[in-house]
Image 1: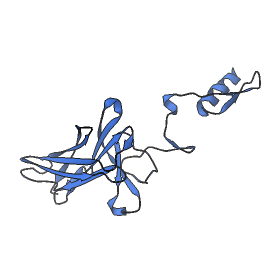
Image 2: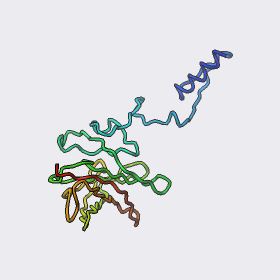
Image 3: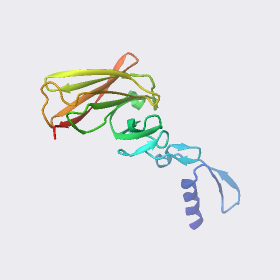
Image 4: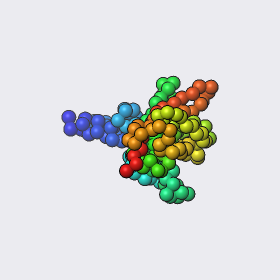
Length: 195
């Protein structure tokens, strides 16, 4: 029983390593695929998920669906990304995903707000993809467009409050990409305060 348990644990912990049978002494190559073991790796190291609110070097972590890592403007050119909480939606069985994030969920009304978006096709970010962000203020809309950078992240900024918007009112920003003749959008948002 003890040897059998060792085989099972070895198989789970080292899914591609050969297992030596305790009965025959022969090596048997095994390969087990379970959802538990499907993690991103680089060479033999596990790549951790990015955590919202943290900064990472490019490639130092991977973005789970609810996180979007964007270039940190304070460290321009250093390759440091800031992980933001993101809204996301998937189409075509998950092969096409749009993510949207906002730089500050609560912002002073005198500071412009920045919206970020990313189009992922078959798991890969699309550098150069055109994003349209539409700010839905009370009493009007503002729209801006930009192209995704080398990380596949597009961004644009607008005034945090405009038209007849009020203090602490939620401003929704629709982030959209066109791909294959169709438009794919997801909403994010923030609140602006004059305090």
